[in-house]
Amino acid sequence: MEKICTAIGVSYDVLHSDIGKSSDFSVNEYTFVPKARASVSAGDGFTAIEDGVESRLYAFRTDWLRKIAGSTNNLLLVDVVGDSMERVLHDGDSILVDRSRNKISDGKIYVVSYGDETYVKHLYNRPDGRVSIESENRAVYRPHVANIKDIRIHARVIWGARVF
Image: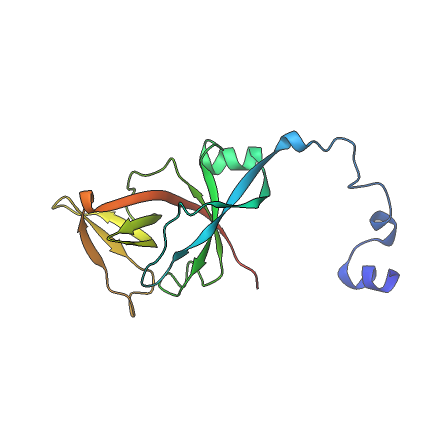
């Protein structure tokens, strides 16, 4: 064990001490966020975000969530499937979305339904009053232009995680 600690630069004594076992820890410092059973498409679109949530909750520090989301009341974790947002989001990534943010801020990433399909895409307001729905992977996926009344913005993506 001491050789492993030396190799990774962690003191053996610190590893076996009471550091990190503080009684100051409080579950009240965390917000528990549900994860959607459904995934969102970074591709050709499918399934809706309202298909329910897993029974397991995921813990995030409340102070951190307030910095990135403002409120912790409308957050949801969702898995991404597909390659249309590659360079930013990859197949298998998990994203944290804020369901209270449904007004377009140009270039931000949203979970949006268009027609019968649900996607994760960049949204842009156009001068003609319509919305451009764009993938990151523009070499493969062309932008769509839609009337604002024909789309439903479910949430804005505020954070993502990837397993390497």
